[in-house]
Length: 244
View 1 (cartoon, rainbow, N blue to C red):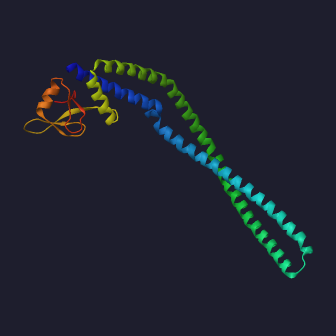
View 2 (view 1 turned 30 degrees about the horizontal axis):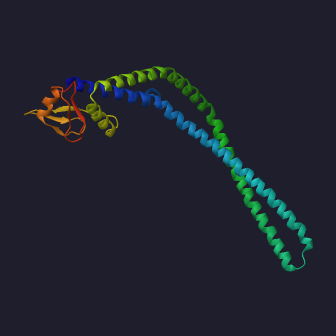
View 3 (view 1 turned 180 degrees about the horizontal axis):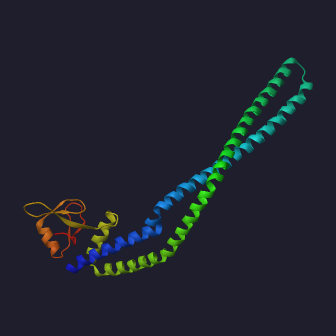
C-alpha cells in the first residue's frame, strides 16, 4: 500500500509537469510574455489602421461612384427640360434636379470626409511603421529562439507520457480509477497535502486544498503510507515533505 501512495504522488508530479509542458507548447513562454503582449497590441493597432485606410478608400470610391451616377441623372433631367409640356412637369423636373444636386453635395462631403480619414490613417501607418518593424524584427528573433527550444520541451513531454503510462501500470485498477476520477473532477489535481496548523496544544491537521480538518487517525494512516481521502473534497491525501 505504501508503494501505491508513493506511486500516486510521483504520478501526480509527472501529470503536473506534463500539463505545464503541453500548456507551454500551446502558448508563449514566460520570458516572451511581455514582448508578446506588446507585439500583439501594436500589431492590432497597425491592422486597425490598415483596415481604417481600406474602409476610407472604399467609402471614397463608393461616394465617387454615387456622384458619377447622380451627375448622369442630372444631365438626363436637364436634357428633358426642353420636352416638358406644362408648368407642373417643369416644376417636378426642377425638383428632381435639385434633389439630385443635393445628393451630389452630400456624397461629396462623404467623399471628402473619407479622403481625410484615409489620409490620417495612412499618415499614422507611415509614422508608426518604422518602430513596429523594429518590434516585429525583435519578436521574430525571440520567436525563432523559442522554436529552437521547443524540441526539448516536446521530448520531455514524450518522456513524461511514457513515465505516466508506466506509473499507471503499477497501480491497481481501483486506485488508478480513483486518481483519474478525482483528477478529472479537479482539473488534473487529484492530490492534496496535509498541513499542520501551528498553534499551542494538540496537533491539528487540515486538507491543503479545501482546509477541511483531517482526523488524527487519518494522519497516522497516511504516515503509514495508506491511501486516504479528504472527508470533504475527496482528494487523495499525502503528507507534504515540509510538513511537521
